Image (cartoon, rainbow, N blue to C red; front, top):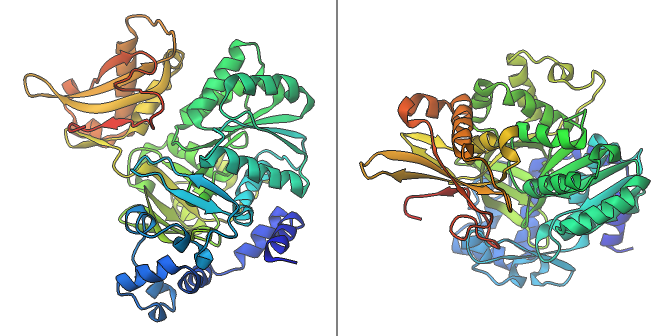
Length: 499
């Protein structure tokens, strides 16, 4: 039996609880050192990289020495060495699929992998489907709403969900991709035959699907609709608003966000515990700032350090993990940090949380003792205004108020402009929904809502910005405006003065 067959058999015939229990007995430091040694032996590009950095591989024999290894990234490694040389064995043989990164930082990058390497990621999906949605006990329709094609989201998600079905979960996987008409067709035809329906996609698009379906008479609550997100940070207010659309009564169990990248797959996943903690922190801005060091609320997920190993470098994340192109201290440039399970509970205890019940979870809920990683997104997506760092996440909450969301897509561009008098002005360009014809008072309503949330969430803004300068200037733009919201381009929520 081949190594691949053994791995699939082990995955299919081993329960989620046992898989995670076995992982918990392993030493993450020993695992990542073993991966390093494999890369030295089997990855030609990595050997060349170390030689050019004058690193003696023989000197890396414990975790402290591993931490001295140079970071790799797209610029100094992925775009320098030929793709086959970056693969295990120096060849693309053994890789049977490929994903392409978005190219938002420059040249698109190809990421080959094999189905074997999806199994670790399938466990992340399994956690969501079992621990949150109880899909081991309910017939479930999973509707993949990510774009299908070379991008990592759609086919990766589909493949991992198929692994769950192959394992024996009562799961049907539908793949309409990001075609709203097809998604709604699938839901109308199939959802009545299942105990629950799961929509998987990017947050703004899932909202669009829910709104379009409701407009066409789909009663999402009747289908016990659950949601799986990836790709963007969103607020707990936004989660609650979508929960209203789906009839959610258990917000910590009815949705989950995945932290994933094209290069590393799914690195971590929201759990009922991480969502409960995040929802508590959303009402405790001071505690959130104490924990995360910033006023904005990051994505908070749990991860398996024996699958994806995280480190922090200058407040940004570094990850190591096995793949066809292995990642060794790979700098993914997302701003964030890590917390052990015990560190998180110690912090909660210090703030009066003594049990899961204090977070609103069932008294008998047993969380998995996995560490946490928090993710703000790219480190430079901010603007400075009167010395205060303004984050897109702060503004997003202002746009998510009930009287505003029905007019806007959720996309905006935040920038600081200089007036003719030399004063600074906080400007927000907001995209309208297609064919929207809002009342003339909408810009003022949005400006007031944004200011209210900035004052609530961002202590720098509240203390640094003069009162008379706190109300932003809001301009509404038509859907797909070519200057601010062009179609087919990865959206940027901030614009610097030099842009």
